[in-house]
Length: 350
Image 1 (cartoon, helix red, strand yellow):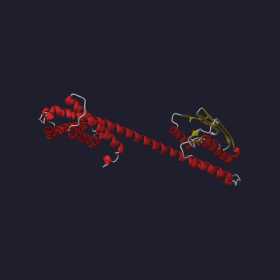
Image 2 (cartoon, rainbow, N blue to C red):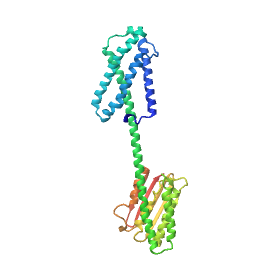
Image 3 (cartoon, rainbow, N blue to C red):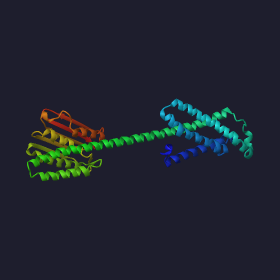
Image 4 (tube, rainbow, N blue to C red):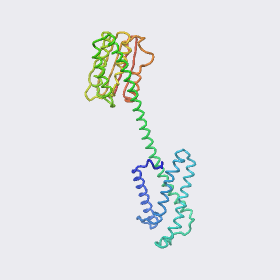
């Protein structure tokens, strides 16, 4: 049955412990009420009537009535059914006690039998039994709602995690084609001129692709490896542009144990080459510093007004999304352009 498909053995153990505690409570209460002393006694009324009926009514409420009415927010109708269930439970408990427990006590516990009222209809006792059953139903209902809420929150967190992973993987997947587009353009330019530098460029490109495919599968990579990756990329672009580009790359303060999300810095360098040098000559300055757990990364390039597109490129758009996903509240990104240069400045807490 669908109702039982998600029941785990730990749930069964918890339910058994709950009902054991309920039986102990009933036994202690019965002894206290009848002899005015604290003790433990399990009469037939508790074992054969009170506990079984309470368990049946409880699970009717948890497995049938709550999913049918409460979960669908039909609270008024649920309240009516709740009152009907505890009233029926009280009446049934009293009826079975009158029909079976009293005859048993007449034979096996005459002293107790003499104290009992022999009439079935005792409104105050039926009301008390109904109230006790209502208390148990309320407690189990609250526990069930708490459990459902915990499972719902856990499920929502899992969905958010899966969404986060899927979106992040999509953004990473979009970076790779963008990089390939630029680097193959570089290779194409060399092959057109039958340059002897083309084989070396192919080798560097192979090394870069190996890094992208096999070294960036995890959530983080060494910042030193990422810097070496940038240097290889810059070397490829320098081969392509030759004396058309004047580039400076300064790096300091990076330790061997510093980690960063893979392929996070590349789009800034790609953007500098694509929009700063693509249609002419120019300069690029890159500064990377790591200090007290913070990365300071600045890329500045020359450009002419026509070189900058009206819409952000795929690279910078993706890196903004990745920063928000991976480092929310731990980064600042400023993009500044003036008449002769474009500057991207990233401050990132690692």
